Amino acid sequence: MTAPSSIALPAVGAGLVWRPVTVGDIGLILDLKRAAGRVDHPHSLVMRDELEEEFASASFTPGSDAVIAVDSAGRAVAYGSAAAPASQETIVWVELDGTVAPDRRGEGIGRALLAWQEARGLQHLAACDAVLPGWLASGAHDHAIPAIRLLETHGYERARWWMELERDLAAPVAQQPSLSGVRFVPYAEAWQERSRSALNDAFRDHWGTQPVTAAEWAAGDRLSAFRPDLSVLAVTPGTHEGERVVGFVFVDVTREEWPLRGGPFGYVTAVGVRREARGHGLARAMLAHVLQALRADGLNHAVLDVDAENPTGALGLYQSLGFTVTDRSVSLVKRF
Image 1 (cartoon, helix red, strand yellow):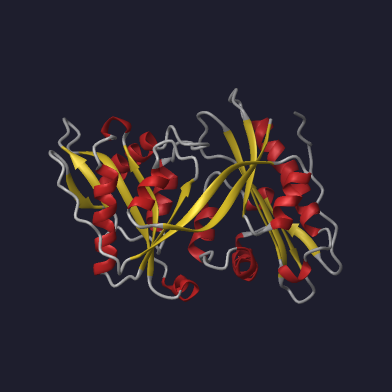
Image 2 (spheres, rainbow, N blue to C red; image 1 turned 90 degrees about the horizontal axis):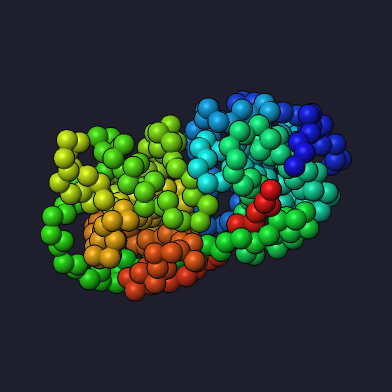
């Protein structure tokens, strides 16, 4: 693998000025992502605080990790980034995030943007001292055929499918039996590190997952969509550290997205159980608890995403609880 020592800015697109990104561009990028999202992912929105947290991350330097193309009216027409991993244990995963305005597609802008992202991604891989596989990775909804074709043309392979599932909360939720020695508590800051430890253990055997750092966890807690009161932790008696988190279900609620799905809904961002606590119905019990809480909060639907090949059988669990598949997306990877 050879990484370029320097990377020229793209130079395509009539009337476009390409330049490195600054924090002051967040508003332009948000507008671009919202416009593209109406085509690429019409049921979800990129939120401003998500971009702000990304730009504030110690592992992301906007001026060298991202580029933007602006037209003569000052509108962002293209944006692309190549983000270095905050942690690496089994893979050095560099995430490529690229967006082109729908009305400017078909001009070669996406190809030029991807070339820049790949070059920056190779620099990230070359700068890593870890002796691990290196991945450049991106993703798309399965209806985004041009984006998938572009990536595949440049050597990316469809590596994993993700299913979006939805459940109507008007349907009753079966009460689950209580589990001996386990109590459910809402998430709170006091549980932060114990929850992060539980998540990193629960997802250690999931495809591509790398440990979540303390800084990444804190950033997620700050997002306005996060609803700790609707999230639940399963805790058991511990030793010197107090009670131990053995399972979790986390929930986001974004009111701005409600019109996109026809009414109030909550998004289940993560479900997990520590490996030593699996096989006792804990995930089912936590999910039933959360679904009841969402319904009591006045929400009409619950939405979640799952790896189609999840090793714990999560897809079957969700379907048995009344979730049905509504959409699919795919991760594409180029391996080094």
